[in-house]
Image 1 (spheres, helix red, strand yellow):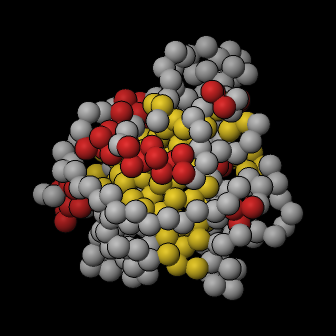
Image 2: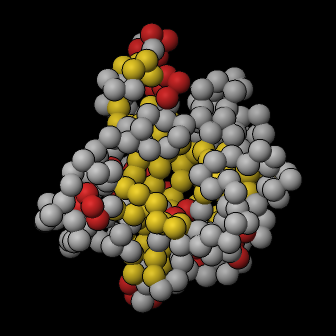
Length: 291
């Protein structure tokens, strides 16, 4: 499978209404509490930047952000593509459908989408990771990310950094539902013999040859470890497979870096299965959106 970094001009911008804040497990943001994954699709929770928060326990915002909460947002997700409006129109557009097939996907489906704000001054880092860690499929990895820049993304305001060639590597770990919390069925409601005091999600190590010493962190020297920046213009689209090692640095500039991101995988029509261990699970009988 080749690594595709494509440029397409499909820019959209959608006003965001103020809603209640959620919590996320990203290092750059307020830590995940106990949110069942389906609510992250149906209720569209908003996630706040950690530097906009006074108290992690209460989620109270700093005074500077109370009058304009949107400036405190890290992201909204993970089902923005499921509601009528600009995000769904874009996701189901012929341009997106034809691009995925041009890249080799035959029966793509959409497990999740995110609007990332990367706010000026406080936009947090996103540590090095492979998307397939969180969007794992069997018997092969089929995740592809479509990263649409809604603002110019530069080295100063937190553009992507990628490690060329890493798309050929195996997935190093998988973010899974913890069987000690959910039980053997991995179903929150049906699990038996569980310990709810245990963390909901854990990382399962899959591959570790010692070559990557920055898993879940930022390498001390990006360029020495083979990372390169990928600046792009508003309206550009970056497309890359789920095994590509990538990250973004904090945004300390005076300019925000908004993006809309889709993550797609091959569907069951291509004999590809969404892992039952994955953190994100739709209710039985509710399928992913087909493209």
